[in-house]
Image 1 (tube, one colour):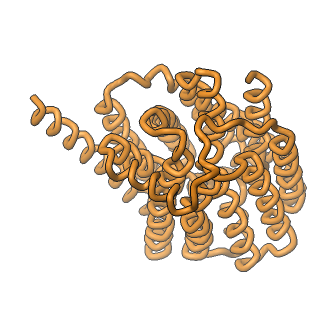
Image 2: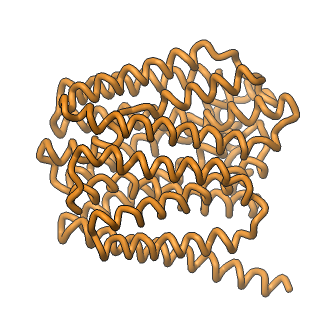
Image 3: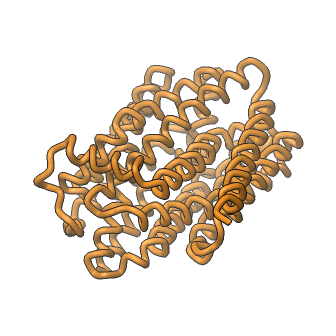
Length: 387
């Protein structure tokens, strides 16, 4: 099992060792993309993953999960090549479609692969810890890639895209040589719709699973979608382009620390995490109000808080579902995340186009805090009724 986990860690490292990460949003603006175009590109990316999210989870419950992960990496490789040779709106759009396919193939599949391998050895209680470690490694990879992106951008976007493509190929090779992890419970005999029906039944008939899916999807949608605009915030706030990589590197470092220690908070009350949600919204609002280089520290704090929330609630979700539909349920959660992200991308871009990026950040600070408050009030009311 140790070799399996080691290779999983290596896969995750190169999967996120992408130098274009801290630069692509600003790259779009450098090539003349308006706020509505940037939002449209991100929305297309989200829509692609949205359409394939649940089917990809079903495929992962039926077929080889490592092969699905490999195919996803190859598809993303070609996406970066499109960006390299066609740096215009259409080229960026095609590249994001390919990246969206990869995201859909990876999301539920990766977590299910890890959980079933752990369960095979009776170590499923370690899932939150292992998942947190993979996220930490992911953030370390982003940290290093971001640091290298600062000098690399001096050689131009083509150079950065080539290095990113190489990293994707390496991650694909690692997953290709990975021994096939056995599913804790086989689902190969089941048909497409029977697996889907089982996953949906588990999600919507189990109140605990349903609540976890909704909250986790909301958390991932908000943090994931807003994450795409951080470098635009930094760029508009006056941070030089060579500093963008350093900024995202610091953000990745904070997220890595949060994810590494997140499992220690697994037993804490849900009220604590809803309160953190409210705090995150207030932090984002303050950052938008200041809209300066020092305010970037507040964005780092925002990401730190959300990293803890995501790891803890993802673990809660996996502990609440069976292996036979694990990838389907996980992908259903990601499916809902993409729906939320799509709404956020378009609304954020609309606000920025009509007024400014700053106003978009201010408004979403209020939205995040409001959602946290709603969940906190609902939880307290539920406790009062039970008593």
